[in-house]
Structures are given as C-alpha cells and as structure tokens.
Length: 259
Image (cartoon, rainbow, N blue to C red; front, side, top):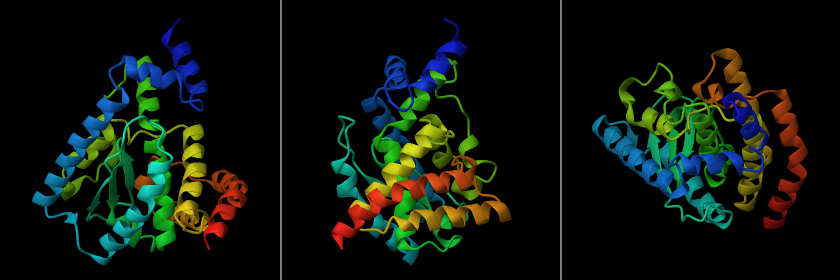
C-alpha cells in the first residue's frame, strides 16, 4: 500500500483518533514520550524567556490569563482520557504576536499580544485556552505526528510555527511547537473537535460560551486588517463560526446551570 493511500486513510480516521495515534505510538511518539518531550521544551522556553526578559509573571495581562488558566484546569482534568496525568503549567510571553498553544501534558504558552491586541475579555481568553486545551487533551498533536510518520515528515517541520517573527523571544518557544507538532495546522475535523470541546470546557468553568463567537469575529477582523500568526494555524471563517453557533445551545445549557 503506497504512502499517499495510507495518509488518506489516516485523515479519514482523524475523528475517531485511532489510526494515526497508533502510527504515532509505533513511531515512538506515545503519550508518555510526547509529554516528556513537551515538558523539556516548555522548561527550555521558560528559561530562555527568563534570560531574554520576555517572561511575564506579574502584569495585569498575566494575572488575567493565569486566573483563567487556574479556573479551567480542574474541568480539563475531568475530561482527560489520555491515561496520563497532566502537570498543567503556564508561561506567558511578552510579545505582540497573536498566538497561544497548549503542548502535550498541559504545557500552556500564551503570548500577551493575543490578549492586548484583540482586547479580549476573560471569557474570550477562556475560549482561546479551552480550544487549545482540547487539542492537548484529545492528543491532536499525536494524531498529526502519526499522519506525518506515514509521509516521512514526523517531527521535522522546522521553525514554521512562529513564522519569521521569532525575534527576541528566541527559538525555544518555536521549537516546542514544531518538534511535537503543536504548531502544525490541524485538519478541519480536529479544529471542529477543539471548537466544540472548548465551548463545553469554558461553559463548565462558568464562562459564557457566547464569547467564543465574539473571539473568532475579532480574529477575523484582525486577519482582514493585518493577518495573525494564530490564524495561520487556526482556520477561521464564517463556516466555522456558524458551526460553533450550532453547538452553542448545548454549551449554553451547561453554562446556565452554573449561574
């Protein structure tokens, strides 16, 4: 069976999260190994940010991101079915980049630009974080790595995640994304799963899921004006927002029960 056919089969099984993750395990990218790699990359990112004085641990932006992070964590743990306990950690980086991601094992990286440039509310921060947490909780990076392995591209994507504006942040944050697949564009099906799961996660934590719609509307306006690195790996369009609107009633019901 040729590699193109195998790749197609893996794409078809993306929603079930079985075929490609099995290939990833065979390629040495099992959950435990990925989590260890992510921890190492995250620690390097923090150390480099400390050295470059780009690690934010005290600003009002950091405090808001950290508060949302702490509020979401217990609900994220409740839906963790990876078989691996997540050691959730947060790094907030001072940068104008509109970006955020959550690496395997619960390593959260947020850039201040995504909050400040978009003037995000706390609920909109939760929408970003919830979406990214679901990517990690459903091991979408592992799925991507499995797909790459079938085309001999596993763990070899360079520094494309951060684009050409790595700047004073250094390379560690970019490498963390590239080496474990976090920075790769996810398939539409995986993005949809993260959208839906993120809505439910933020609602369980008591954030109004309506904020996910306003978040992506802001993203679209920014994309139309000047583009953003976040949108380069997170396809955002009217069809996506419409799909989220269809999932809103279920998330809204969860949110309303908490009020």
